[in-house]
Length: 88
Image 1 (cartoon, helix red, strand yellow):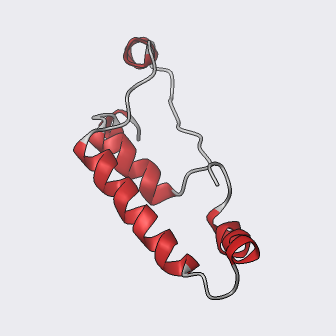
Image 2 (cartoon, one colour):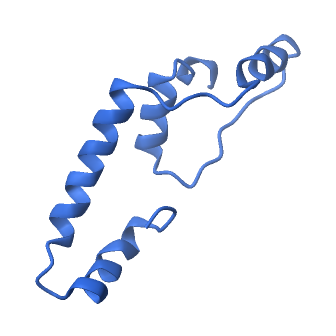
């Protein structure tokens, strides 16, 4: 289900495992585990991202983050990677 929008996962699980499958509980647990693990160990930065941010900042070029990830999760990752303060 990687890359699948969360609004589609319940239907996908129900279709494959039947209507009694605890898809809501599975979704909640997966989300909890995902945040717990990414809090314990931030997602690794891509090679060169710090140098790119430094260059953009030195040249006063505005920066933004584009992602299909939910905003609160993206903010979580940026904060735990030490990058959140680098974006206005």
